[in-house]
Length: 275
Image 1 (cartoon, rainbow, N blue to C red):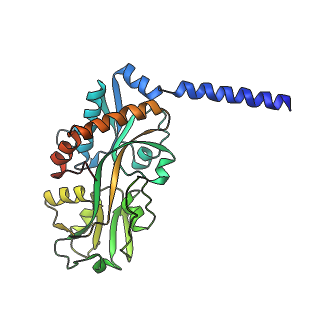
Image 2 (cartoon, one colour):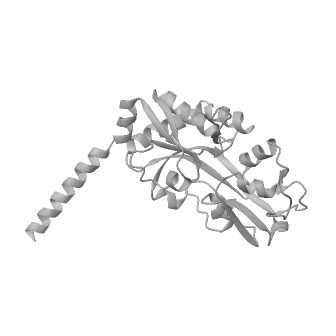
Image 3 (spheres, one colour):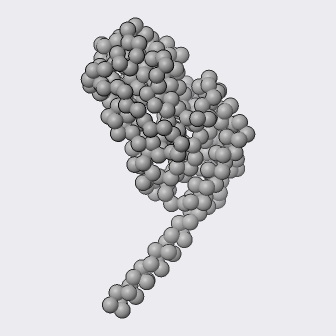
């Protein structure tokens, strides 16, 4: 028994030492290298995408660059798949995730929510020739969503947003069929063919829908009825509370001084910085 207790004590000491070693590890790495690696998306305009010069641009890119500027470091971007970006266990490959991530209870188990930096309404998107005038008109219809996103969780009635002060999600739509797509723009490519040809509606962020319409897609947003409204967070690996607190403080500064208001208006034409 004494040996067992001694073993427990040694194990606890080793764990404490390991925890201490991890404290500040991301913050130290970034500040020593004067460089930060951000995980984001490469095909989600206007949040983040490659322009004609093959450069990463978009709202999330500008937010990342501003965080880096305030830290006094350079920033580079990596574009892992969505499950990797939101799944944590990055093993130091990325320092932050800036990809318009929704804070859900499941994700809270594997990643840190550094701070809410804007809010996004999700909307029902229709072909411009659709006769639907309300959510009731979409009952039993074919609905498209991007896979592994909150729109997929919503349409399957399993969305659990982990943020204080938000009203509970209401599920009004009973789809006939749900079709999932690997990219945010792919559902719109099917919807643009005509109402009911492949899809009857798409559930997507308002910003993404407006950008598709701006770029010539023959679509419209169902007026007067959001699917749901979600906060979006910057995320970090669960290894360094000091890093999470440091960047969280910068995000709060960007809210207070109007930077996030300016950036959302620049990229979306609306101020989405407040709930």
